Length: 276
Image (cartoon, rainbow, N blue to C red; front, side):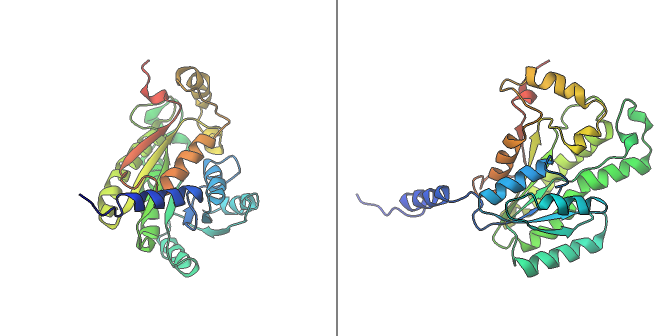
């Protein structure tokens, strides 16, 4: 009996082989938020995305916009930097219009946005007033939905949105209301995956282990993570090396996880799976 080998047989294998011989993001248009310095996790993602063939645009906001612009010059190909304040509804429309006029479509986007006022971090969980907590929730969690408002209308052929996370299924020393915000981010990820799945748009999170970034310096007990993570993680962990996070994130932004959405992928050396 003879049969026709179609897209699920040799043809599909050939397509995969061609993709593998090119960059993972060859010809993809990728929006990247959260680059402040070359120590930012988002910078590592941007650098690798370019190496894998992506066209990228960065965003920045407020006083950080000039930092983002300076850091953009350190990339192999200096990308355009656009202003995007997630608390300003006008920026949603302006950024979407600019992306549409520049690219026509968006294939992938990175959410690397987070902030909590000082009172939300530290030893006293009860100290933070609602005025500060709502800032942490809006910028660190609701902004994921705000980014989706920008990019999903331009993902006409499907796409991938990835958020950088720090596992909020447990409580951490001094992380306090940022941990609550990350829990909200994780829930938002699931609902965005549900809402946009019918349009073949995937939403996933990469829960990274601790890396020395500007954001990490704002956590009073960050040294406690540094002291134990490498010992407990079965694969080990280097707080100075973000390359594993970048590689995993770029893979999630690509077409290589076509049936994965609403998920949180741990890139932490296996720390999360170990007991006390």
